[in-house]
Image (cartoon, rainbow, N blue to C red; front, side):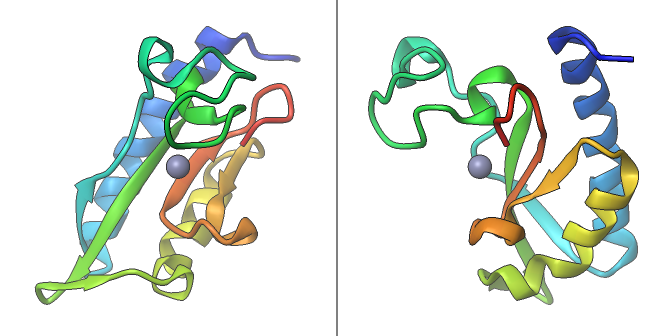
Length: 115
Ligand SMILES: [Zn+2]
């Protein structure tokens, strides 16, 4: 059954909670990077205004970037995110991890081909 955008947005938020809990269990700490990117600032879907991809899941409330820390050290590579990325991918068939496209801190749900 196809999910609506709203259903995906609500699922995404619930799954992010699970991701945050899992990060703690693995000994990581997180801070939020970008979550929602307001189209008034970033342009509507398909339009590039400012930084970020024109067709970004952030504009649909379906993506979040997390800053990853362990023992106070900021971990910045996709490899660092891999344990969390693979956990994220296991949560739902629509979950996408940016480590698959050189954007390791990006966690999203796919919608209309956008990740
Ligand atoms: Zn992102």
